[in-house]
Length: 184
Image (cartoon, rainbow, N blue to C red):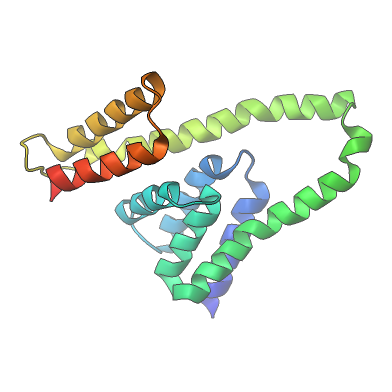
């Protein structure tokens, strides 16, 4: 029962103080997950990948992944509720009062000040997740060290999506097939 309370309050706290969406929350979720000993970084990174492939909000998918790994279906539901509840409460309050304040210079100043923080939070999460391939020495079947193969896949898919407008779902499927081909 204590683990369910920990899951709920951990995700409630992350949801309450995180600004900028799921990717901005990633570092805080990782820190909390490691602190509680719920999983290691490799499993967490797998959860990030699965959450990115799953439909719906990224943070909810990640909370569900962690919850199910820690306490099964009940843990998944509790974690997801903890993640969602702060947003429901905050948006309900903001929606109630925002139209009266949306043109206020102080409100506009607060919003302008928050935007750069969101970029910083996302950049911190990208750095934290991107450094893992460089510290992993998984071997591949094709002779490229696993860390460089992962980086190469990421670069090729980023270029394909940006330059050639490859659909993200196709990129995910191709990356999975390439991963099977070179790692299995």
